[in-house]
Image (cartoon, rainbow, N blue to C red; front, top):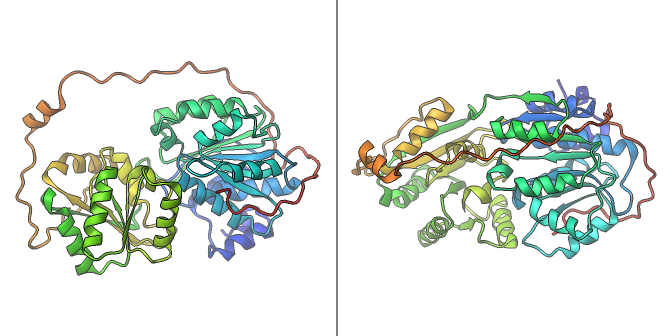
Length: 434
């Protein structure tokens, strides 16, 4: 099936083809018709499966059916957990909407608010935002949600993990009840289903891959090595296998800074990207990496969430993640849009329990490759040592919130919405509010 068969307009199909795509992905095949039909949608899909286009394309078609937003109003809101993901989604909105007379902007913290406020005053068809900055602007009365038609919660599982639930609830309380709501998540966890039951009405559920599965396009390799020789092994692999570029994950910001310096000292073009870096510094590092000026980008999980890097060949787990689900998100940075990639995990004796947890989650064994000269000498901790270090006692249960009354509203189908006049001033299309 091609994109025309999904019911998309010629302008949208042309924009998709301009980006080099000819066939819809499974998530697009399932989600696009449902969104066009006005349904609320709860979708689970691995990163790199084309999920952004799965909601951006039908939303743009719906918005274009009526025309541009009135001055000061917002017609669609996309909430994302991180600045990087917000920028990526906004870039997709601009790309796919390049042949439409619609307006978009992005709002997040770490940069001056004035340009964002100016863009909002003009009126935007699509607003992509992180919860914190958006809530701050909304509480100042600088955002008009009265004409909002569509809400998208992107990477909803990560927003919950990052503690944004209270901000999300406050933002949703400001929105019209008569709206279409879409929720995209890597998994259908209990928490995600609970959130969906509060804010989605009779949602269509779409799942294109088993929960917590990894794509077959990514070759996964684990390298046993002593913990104090990880940097040495990474440098060896970089030289021996002549990697063109790699995204390297560290568990902490301090570890990312330290590894960056060690790799710079070894002669590699390298930059870190983590929460202590300013948004401008993070964007410069990402742009340099995308442009081929950096061979290595050293990232923490939070900073790397939502990074969309075309043709990224290698991902390195310098430190294994403490949460097994983060491994799935990490290696999903490669093997995207039909391309192949490789994931390399440097595994010390102390990392052995983490690797076992990852293999249990993804239901597959990760092949071990022993590199000559780097055979590990450390031994894994014994079960008794692990038990003594972990302490005793049960963890507290998660507090369950009372469920609010179900939201009832009318639906709109076929990508249409109630018509409003088009008396927009003529702001130029905003490529970014930052």
